[in-house]
Image (cartoon, rainbow, N blue to C red; front, side, top):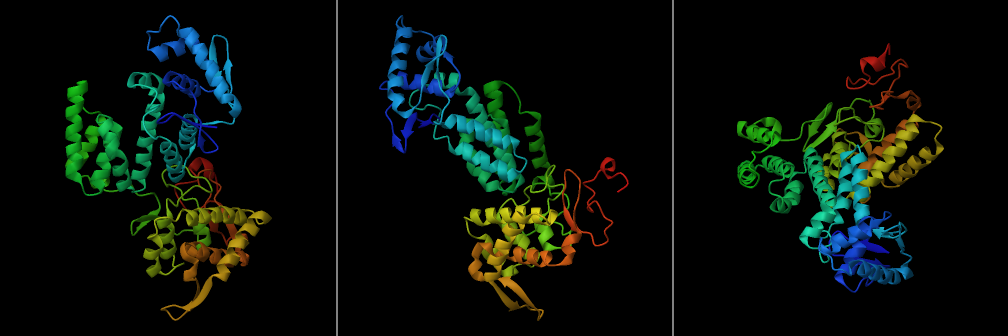
Length: 442
């Protein structure tokens, strides 16, 4: 069974709505228990919430009656309402509660080290909200008492997602997300700062400055305080025309190609470049960490390394929906990394070989402007052209004795792959990894 609390209250079973609770107070009582699923809510607390501190003499008996009706309605769906001491609890079970799912997704986002993964968790979490908490069974006062923690978690998720999107250059998305929220929370300073930054980076500096002025006036009128230091500093930097505000700070060891940050070519082979975890990209990275924030980066990178023709790059990055192709490329990268770092990993080799064989079937041999022939992915490969291009280079490396000279930088925060034909290198060539304490005499 599925219960939705983040918006109008509803209960569904196998896609069909289930009528639970003939009275608003009954549904409200069930909602309170669902918000605390697995834990007992004392009867006194239920009475206080349902009657807002002014209960009738029959309140305890009424709660008991409501619970009996709810048990009868939920029993066919194996949702149990238990009596625990002087209170009641909805038993944790296979039923789904959107508020619990939201909290879990926000927790996963907080644990994710990769901004793309974080944004994905936040997107799924925030999509669960269909309106104010318990929009049809709770008034504003009860909603504030029940949902203050969830409401704060929601705003914090929006703010963190906005920061991650700003770091990836997704300024228009930030503006679209925050504009309606700022109407509800005009003095929420982290929201204001993110919106000001996004407006500034899209050439709307005057709007950003006006937003600061409105926020300053509201803070003074409503709360009697000035903007916080971070917001004032942001405003001052905009007035000075600080060029560092114009775009996110560039990653260490990166180059700007079109509108994408791409890593320096350092490993000596395109297949290794594709696998590499790039040190200095916004924090500690481990093998498999994400340096592809979106499909556009993959397309630009493939063109930059001459794996696909430059004239195709613009066309490749135009499609709005390329999630499946990007996910497939990331899976291939994970398998290829495993294959290159462990020659005995038969599973990884078979996974790589499957993609290589698909690439071979969808390749054409063409003559370049330099007069040399080269294999290219066929146009029929569509959005998989960058993947199939790198798969061919991977196949060439795996068929070359040089594959046994592939080394992985042992730094805990690096893991770069590089060719070491001398057999004497241990660390990669970047100064951002292998600190003096780690390097020792290497």
